[in-house]
Amino acid sequence: MARVEVVPQKKPPRGLRPRLRRSIERLMDELGLEDKTVTVILCSDRKIRELKKAHWGEDAPTDVLSFPTYEPGDPFMPPHLGDVWISLDTAARQAEEAGHPLEDEMRILAAHALWHLLGHDHESEDDWRGFREVQRRILER
Image: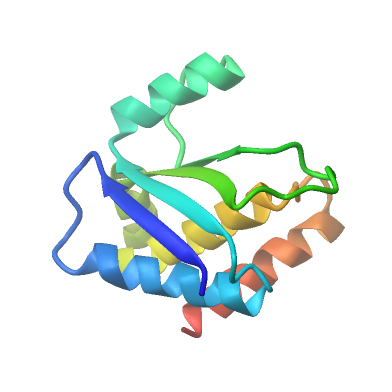
């Protein structure tokens, strides 16, 4: 079974960490990643803004960032796929705007980030299909 560690740098609502971890692990198992691990860090807008500025040169908060531990396309995929940073602040705003629970928004963002860790990007409408599919699948869990 895949292993996910959820690290709170900002305190999430009670019960969110274990449910998020289980949802991601089940999705990873479905995707054939049962021998892989991922770290998910829950943070504030301030922290994710710092990361985005340091790594992408953009001085603005965002919802989620992915940091793979390998170069996508490399034939060797290490056991630890990478780190995912999710802003609880932005996720809460987006959940409210979308009219669904914070937990659903967190699962959507985690699935989106996992797809990035696997080397996918969303430069075209065709690219978005894979993202939408994993986001739909994680909500079914």
